[in-house]
Every structure is written in C-alpha cells, then in structure tokens.
Amino acid sequence: MRTVTAADQNTLLSRPDWYRRLPAGKDVHLLGTGLVAVTGNRAAREALTHPGLVADHPLKASSRAFGPNVLDCDGARHREFRALLAPILAAGRIERWRRLLMPGLIDALVDDVLGRETEDFYRDHAHRVPYGIVCTILGVDRSLEGRFHELTRPLARLLDYPTEETEATHASMAALLALLGEECRAESLRPDSLLGTIERTRDRKGIALTDEEVRSTALLFFLAGTETSSAFITSMVYCLGRSIMDMDELLDESVRDAFIEETLRLYPPVQTIARFAEADLLLGDVPVPRHSLVLVSLAAANRDPEIFPHPGRFDVGRATKASVPFSVGPHSCPGAPLAKTEFMLLLETLARRCAQVSITGDRVLLESQSFSRPVGFSVRFQPRSKDVC
Amino acid sequence: MGSKIEALREWIRGLHDEPVEIADDTDLIESVLVTSLQFVSMVIEIERLHGGRIEPGVIRIDSMRSLKAIDAAVFQGA
Image 1 (cartoon, rainbow over the protein chains, first blue to last red):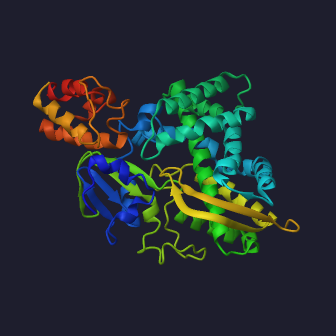
Image 2: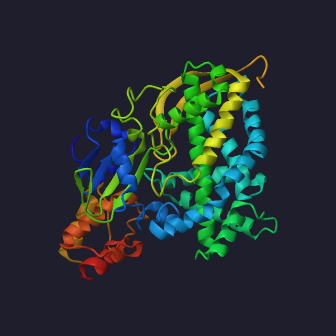
Image 3: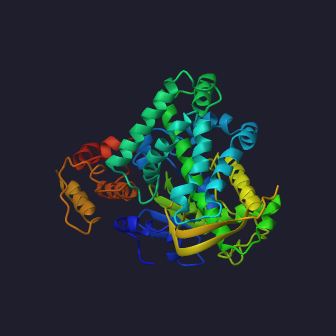
C-alpha cells in the first residue's frame, strides 16, 4: 500500500474494513508520517494496554464536544469517571433489569417483527430494546424515548470516523444536554437512576466533577448503551438470517453464548479505536514516533489468521475466545455485561418464538467504524406454530 | 506572518483537492479545513516547521484553532 498522507486519512477510514487493504502477514503498519495501523490480535492487545498510547487528545472532536469525559481521559481522571458508572453496571442491578425490564421490551419487539419481512431492521426496530433499557436506567421519562432517539443518532456521527461535525450535531448535543438537565432538576429523579447514582457517587467519593460533566458522562453512557447495542442487534439478526443454524439449537444457553461471541468477533460494533503516542515508543519492533495517531482495528484483530483458523467463517464451535469486541485494557467497555445480558435474552426470545429468520435481500455492505452493522439487507421472521416455553 | 506559517498554510491547502482560502484567523476546526484526525498530522507538521518539540501544554484547542493562534503560541512563542 502506498504511503497514506494526511489528506488521505478520511478516505482510508471511510470503509470499516480498511484493514483489508493492508498487506497480510504484518501486525503493525507504518502508513505515513505520524500514522500507524495495528491489525494483529497480539499487537492490538499490546497497543490498547500500552501506557504510552493514550486516548486523550485535546483536538479530538469528542473531547471538544463533551469536555472532559470517560472516553477521552486517561490515568486517575479516567478511573474517576469509571467509578461513577460502576454502581449502575453492578451485577445485581443487571440481574434486576434482566428479570423486570428486558422481557417486556424484547417481547414487544418480537411481537412487531414476527411474521413480517422488514426492509430496514436497523432503522425501524433495532433501537427499541436498547433505548427502552437505557432510558429506564438513565431515569428519563419514557415518553421522551423517541425524542432521545431522534437526537442521539446524528450525534453518534461525532464519535465515528470520518467524524461528521456539523451545526446539526452540536444542536442535537445541546438539546440532549438540555433534556438531561431538565431530568436532573425533576423532583421525580429516582435515586437508583443513572443520573441519581452518578451524582450520589460523585458526592460520596469526593470526585470533582461539575454538573455539566455529570450530564456529559450520562450522555456518553446513553450513546454507547443505545447506538452500539442497536448496531450489534442488527448484526446478530443478520447472522441469524445468514446462518443455516436450526433455531432449536439456540434454545441451549451455551450455543446462544457461542453464537453471540462469534457474531461479536466478526461484527464488533466498534471496528476501529484511535490512540495517540505520548512519546516515541515501540509496538512490537515497530518504532512509533511521538504524536502519532495509532489506529487499532478490533475487526482485524478478531480476524487474525494466526489466532482464528479460517477467520472469515462463521463458526460457533470455535475453541479460541481471543477476540476483543469490547476492547481490552483500561478503556475496555464497562457496559459489556449489560449488553451481553440484553443480547442473550433477545436471542433466547427469538429462538423460542421464531421457526426461522431468513435474509431475503442482501447488498453485503457494512457501515460505520464506531457503530458498525450490516446495511442494505431485508429479513423475514417466520413464527413457530407454537412458542417454545 | 512568517515563512513557517506560510508553509503551514500550504500544507493545509494540500489536504484539499479544490483550492481553499485560509485567512490568518480562519477557524480551522469549524471550517472543517482540518479534521480531528488530520489535526494529529498537523501537530507533527508544526513541530517539524518549528524545528523542536512543542510542549504538551501548548497543544490546546485555543492555541491550534487558527494560523494566527498557532503563530502566537508556537512560532512566536518559542
């Protein structure tokens, strides 16, 4: 591949599978002045845990838009942000939501799609369960769910590559922060809601965060919990429709778990992670100059042929569990257990109620780096003659 | 403005296929003349033109927002 100039960077990242253009057999690629790509599984792990490669860069769009936040901080400040989110993602709370909140949302979604063919599952259906869950966790009025969805989807492009930063994205963000501000002031703010928990944790631990930073943190949690899950649910339905697996097999919890792991391996919602070199350093034996942008492709790491034989094949029987769909290291996704609980229950419900999920049209396209999912496919959900209990 | 800022102006022009106008006080971010990822390359280019390390504290949004700000913070501030 020829040297990638700064002018080419947006073109390079316009495709989620940009890593396919790089030469095979190398894990770390110097693409141009200050631009490094990491595609090997071991090298990706090294990069994501390297103390000299940081998330913080004051000129990043997300950093400028959200101010100090959990995505763009490192070290002690980053740990403080994570501590704010930890109570809300505790196993006990997830279990409560699994029993009391998720079943109703999932059944409503399956009721809507069963017996029908849908042309755009992502646009029309995939968001309903994650938005329902995260709105409840956030403690916002459910009547505002549609409004949150309408405003959040454009905002997601601010975290994508190439970044789309327009007046509309900033207007969406301002509107969402205003909505959150209103919810914060509402007398009905539940103590176990995200906003209530963050404020209480901040005060108890003496974490110096302004109210604006609390709302930015909540907004990022919302964005991650809704849009990444919507993207992955789309991928999961796509893989169900493409596979020849008997739905009865998915009644087995261990098979469902393997199915989700394999879908996450091939279709991680976050395909690429950007890091910045604080100092001159080595990745493997490749020198990375200070200030370099290091693009870590989780998608490529999950298809490393050294780790995964026949990496492009969908195989629920894989022995190796070395994929990194939720990243690794200090910035690994704190919401992974919540997301997997949601995916497992949705897949279980689909297995109980669908005889078959079939892809009826497929343009075989993938879209987005940060909320990646197949696009341009239609899918049909054929009901069972009788639900399996 | 000195030759270093002129060289940087040319470098930013080189990011675009079509001719672009870049005034000294043009906001490089809001005008999308330089994207967030390209900013990383721009910092490296500024350091190369400067001929020495830029202190981390200088790489702030306000000091990198326009050619005029970069000149004041880096080239004249050295």
